[in-house]
Image (cartoon, rainbow, N blue to C red):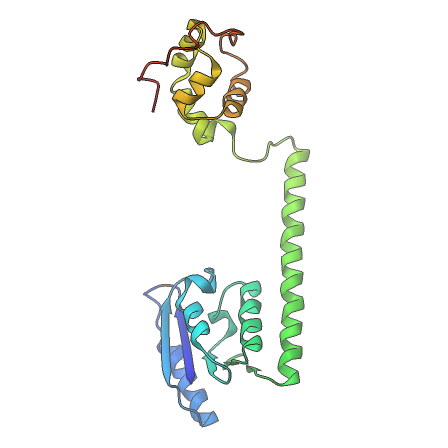
Length: 220
């Protein structure tokens, strides 16, 4: 089976040019396209989330996949390499008409795929290096990395109940009771207490109301 894959990022883009290019290529090679697959999706998505992923799973050894450019497969070089490796492992022939690449079972295609793999690995390493350097530069400037504690979902919810927590501690409820009522762990409670600079009443060593449940207004 010979399949032509056409991908555009938005509905506004046309696939006519891609179809015309593949049709020209098929005429020159004397082959007939059995199926045309059009997909409107960003090339940043992994193949598993695209129609392309389903197509590759259905192709058998000896089947042919044609695209106008390798960039139609993905916008990520690493993802392109994954697709090329998949095709080589499953003996699926891949043609890229404008690029002039033919990935079949020949030694040249395997060497070409290996060269692409080295470039993809280099790209990953450079991205990782740039990320580490950027983070190190931010740390050197005293910028705290990560999401601010104030934006953590648990802390945001607890900020709305801080007065009730204070009141329960003052009345003698245990941390265990308060945590059960709020639906959180003790470690979260103690981290939250540290986050707000201990602006809470002291934790009672022997809770006065150990056997009494906190009011329903505090419980979820």
